[in-house]
Length: 78
Image (cartoon, rainbow, N blue to C red):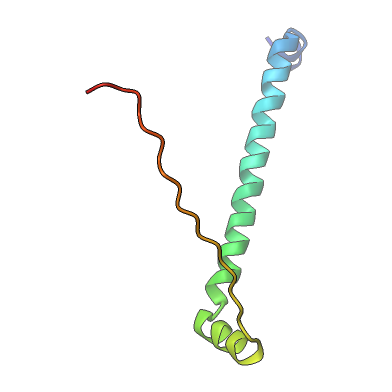
């Protein structure tokens, strides 16, 4: 059976399955490429220099709220 005849006999379910498989592969390749680009960029960043530069140019202000809440008691008997 030729590829063309085999393709003509594909069911809609097979076609959709193939499309989804291709879409998943494309998505994984895209994410991998983005991850690699971000990794290349971040590997070139000098963190100590960046933090020093930010500290020299900006005043740092931190606002924080901390709340302690009692945990709910478990209803499981021991």
